[in-house]
Length: 128
View (cartoon, rainbow, N blue to C red):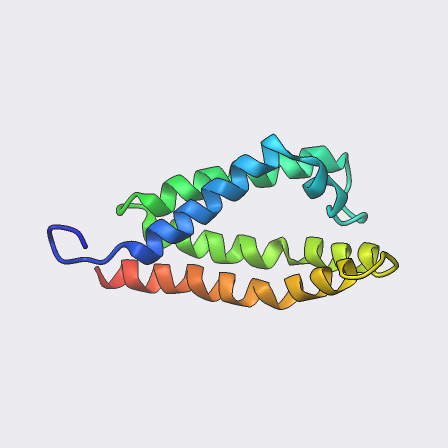
């Protein structure tokens, strides 16, 4: 709780998630490279780096009260845009041994709470 009585836990949680994920794109890019949809032009590493940079920028934007609303909305959009990577993962992992196909399929609906959470941060920021 801040001095003005605002609870920023949702915003800081989202910022932390984006920060960790963004850093992971650069520290361990191979897993991200592997799920870049094959239809995207250019090397997978470029898309991994771009999405990692976007996540880092959004993490900073969500952490800052002044830019929180727009950064949270952009985060929700990002979570929608990266959904095809999860679909690509489910397709690619479908022939692997258990439990990998199940893990890949479980990631698909996981995007919904991420999208909802980012939008919730936007709503809270607009009320503040």
